[in-house]
Amino acid sequence: MHIGQVISMPHFTMMDAMNAIEVGHLTATASSRDNHNLISIWKRIKIMDPRMDNGMKGELSVQATGYLKKSADEFNVQTPLLSEEMAWIFDRAIAAEMGWHEGKFMSQTIHTLQYVHDLYSMASVSTLPPQSEEDMRKRPRILIATVLRPLVIGMLKSCDLTWRQLLQRFVYDAEDWHSEKFEVPLCENFQTSQVVEQLDTAESWLKSSPELPYCDALLARVRLRKSLLRLLSHLSSSLEGVQIPLLLEARSLLEAVVHRYPVPDPENGSPAWAAFDPTICRKLTAVTPLKAIPLMEQGDAWVVLKRMLDELYELYSLAHEGSYRTVSWMEVLRTHGKNWFLRLAVSEITTIPDRYLPTLSNAANEQLMRAGAIEQSGFLIAQLVDLENRLHELIDHMFMTLNQNRPRMRRNFSKVFLAWHRLEDDMQALMNMIEQSLQHLQIPTGITARLPLVTHYLRNTLVVDHIFSGFELELYNPSEYQLMYWHLSVILQNQVSTIQDLIWIAEQNGEQDEMSTRYLRSQNTWYAALRTMCEVRFQMLVHLRTPIGSRGLFPRLDMARQRINMERRFDWSFPSPEENIGLIDVAQPDWAAYMTRVDGVLADDWRL
Image 1 (cartoon, rainbow, N blue to C red):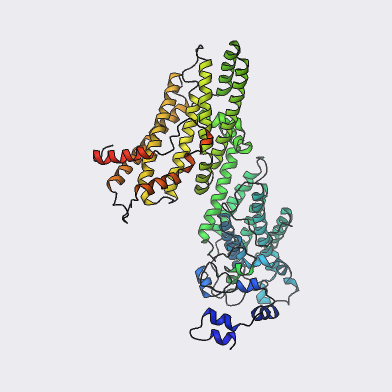
Image 2: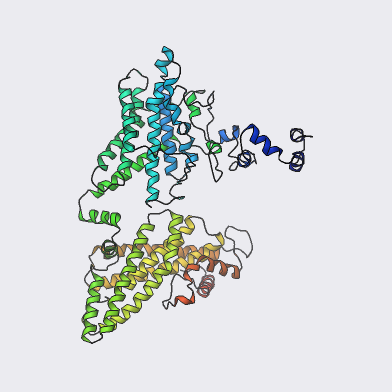
């Protein structure tokens, strides 16, 4: 009995099939007939998992991607197309490109355009037999080589220019977008100027053929692709002003394509439907099997592209606005200068005056020199310089992390909590020493208390955001909500006290009308409201708690398990004994205080 007879049996098993195969038979048959290897054979085995069945091409995979209108024929790169069909392919290629920008794989987006894989055949259509007069009028084959091919190359080159940003560490691979090319070239060997020349040729040809249906729509799309390509080639340049005209041109052309020159979807049976293969991954060299997914809706693709152009225009407009504050912040973004961060970020939101550390260092150094403590003076200056550098690094990390997505932001915050705590501890110890050396001088109120308070305020800000992000990302089990809200209320109460101390210091030094003081007052109101919300939520959960082990809306675990979960969640707040940090960490949850508070809420019966 051979393998075909076994598989045709009503209730055959995998063991039956394996016993029916002779040793070496399957591999020998595949290699001799189809020139396939064992890996390619396994890629074609259907295992009933849509994500893993990337080697199967059937109705299920086509319907799952939304491509219900299938082409009547198989895809042929040299099949003539109507001009409106070509314009529709361009629009869907934009949707694929925007999908890649939003984090999907190339094999799920731009590689689904089948013209990407056969650029050479697109250029050789002139060698085919001549068309009839009617076909030349409706579906001129020269459009494929003259117009469609430059459009496809322009898309690939745009993706290549974007992909190169990965090499400069401007984005994060595998999270902002995926850089895997699946061994498909992105026209890396083409210079941008060469691609622009091809698009110019396409534009000239369309201008000379006004009788072509939908000629204006196709011409607008050629101009849009050329504008996007030129813009992407200048994004990494210095802020020299060339980007703003290009952005204005691209926005205008996009508006024309969307509102003045829309094109209808191809008819059923049109060869344009075969231009996109959502299951193309089965033909590519892929390390990870990928599920076939639909391209985004065309309206959504235009919105994504417009938003990208608008945000770039806003950025470059701010860079050339000319005001001191805007230019200063742009300088921060361009150079990551540490002094700019301290002067603009910290001084304007946390009441630290300009040149605070140098002034403090000079005053303390002069006093120590008068007392004859030369060695202590040198140590003081070295410590202040070290603290300033560490503060700059952490502030730089904070600003860069705030621009990341929420999961990565949460991870990166947790990595530096210990560094913030260690910095605050060292600052407090050094400020105590400075305060002793300056005790006979008439110095402003709280000059030595400001820096530790500011560091504590910034760290608390990151801790609160870190804990709240766990709710946003649905990382907490409902049984943990009660503890989380209680711990948030404790940290927020400490944050309110810290802000009030900073406001008091500012007012004592006549800084009550400064922008930083006004900002702190608004922060005081904000954190006080958050603290009240968390406290009320905590008390509600205490009174709504269910018996241990039950499966209610807010299940409750036994105390031992709750404590283990707490220590696991806040492992970053429990430093090892080798750290030798004397300062108490308010972000470290106190289990005894938590249990006391729960008992107090139950005893007081709903009282803040």
